[in-house]
Length: 351
Ligand code: PHE
Image (cartoon, rainbow, N blue to C red; front, side, top):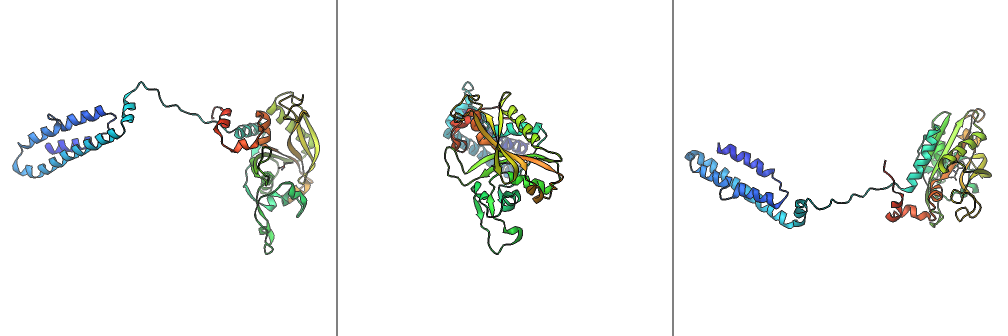
């Protein structure tokens, strides 16, 4: 009988976690008080048979000790954290504030770009940031030792050694554009391809307000039978209207990229001054936002695609540039400094 009671009380003591000094005091009175349970058990003990006394005596003393030690340690705990106890007791105090995070402006704009192209049926493709020479340059029609490679100041990771041969001979570098993902995609599959490639790219530039050693791109590729420059223009025009709104104008200027022929750069009418001229567009009314062109037949061939049967267009844009225009940000360094005063200006609902 007594044994059962002790077992039950032991469990109660072991699982006791008071939230306040008042609860601990109630515990003390219940177990250790002058009219408490332990006093009660010792009274009962006087009446048990002598053989029972031998075993019960030890159990009872151990139980008393358990209750006392538990009480002492809880008391010390509550004394060393008085403010916590006080806070828990005072239910009228206001709750602690809860700070919601916000999306980085580059993520917001990237997601917006992705959404527009997704609606046109483009899928998302990704690839490695550490890339070999073939995927970043050679397959894209950059001739060996040609100054065209200097167009994109490259961070090389390993240098070509004369002993290397075949595929292993390629230099390893941080990718300078996500066109490398286009090569990987074309090598791995069969046309048609309709995909965009968002990702971080690296160029060896001194960090300033206008340049950084890494930035973010979204490139795109569309390869199928009978894809023409008209398709390229219409797709990009639609994209611009979705991004900057109806009434935005576009113009294409001839340009050069090793991997496209013909190549162009696309300007949009300045979304800030609406073409009237401002600092952002250097008073020209136009801002360049992307490079594009028809995929060079050599590139298709390098990726195992028959250029007699298939044609395609490609484009590439910097997310930072588009974000700068959208939010009138004039210093690229703000994007990577993690200054909360800058970042919290783009408060949006996290979804
Ligand atoms: N890869 C080019 C760059 O990084 C952009 C581009 C992509 C241009 C596709 C034309 C076609 O500058």
